[in-house]
Structures are given as C-alpha cells and as structure tokens.
Image (tube, rainbow, N blue to C red; front, side):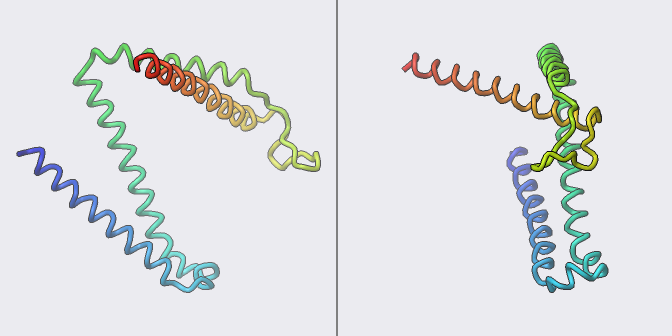
Amino acid sequence: MKDNNLAKYLSIFVAVIALIGAILFIRVFMADIDALENDPDVQKSVVNPIVWFSAALLYTAIIITVGLSLWSMIKNPNNLKKIGLGLGLLTVVLVISYFTADSNAVLDTQGLVLEGGEAGTSMNQWVGTGIWFSVALGLVASLFFVYDLLKGLIKS
C-alpha cells in the first residue's frame, strides 16, 4: 500500500515538472524570433527561465543519484569491495588513456594551428584522454556484448 502511494506521488511530481517544462517551452515558441535573437530583455524573460529550470533539474538529478548511491553503499557495505574494484579498474583505464593520448597541436583542414590548440597544452592532452577512454570502454562493452551473445547461442 505504501509503495502505491509513493508511485502516485511520483507520478504527480513528474506531471508537474512536465507541465512547467511545457509552459516554458511554449513561451519560447510564442516569442518573436527576431526579438529572441536581438532583444536582451526578451531573452532574459523567455529563455533564462527555461535554462534555469533545466539546470535546476540537472543538478537535482545529480544530487539525488549521488545521494541514493551513497545510501545504497551505506545500507549494503558488502558491495564496497565491488565498487572499489570497479573504480580502481576505471582509474587504471584512465591512466593508460592519459599516457596514450598526445598533446600535439590541433590543426584545421588547411594545416594551420587552431587558436588555443598549440602543441603541449593540457587541454589537448585531456581531450585525447577522453577519446581514448571512450574507445577503451567501448571495446570492453563490445567484448562483453559478444561474450553474452555467444553464451546465449550456446545455451540455446
């Protein structure tokens, strides 16, 4: 019975959030396109509320997600070893990705160095790290997908 009430309250909460988002979205479409592009007062009154609302929803979702994860770890300390192992493996992949990435200059299609893309900048290194990190995690995910597929074929 208690879970049913919680589901009802969550449905109402989601409906209210959707309604507020829809109203803010409709306000943007009702505004004149030229005024939206050129008039700062219209931008502040129409665009800023939807941006603020979206940011508030994002931050709320992050806080709730982190909070529930921490609560789950507190309630079930047996999983701390698994969590630590997973974070350790991710850290190893990140370190390998960092040393695999280069910090060479970023060139445009004509071979000229882009502004801010000079050789040796830490931003170039971290962008390369993110790319290699994504590739490594994608490869691991693909391997698990193939493994699960083969396991399913063998069972059948």
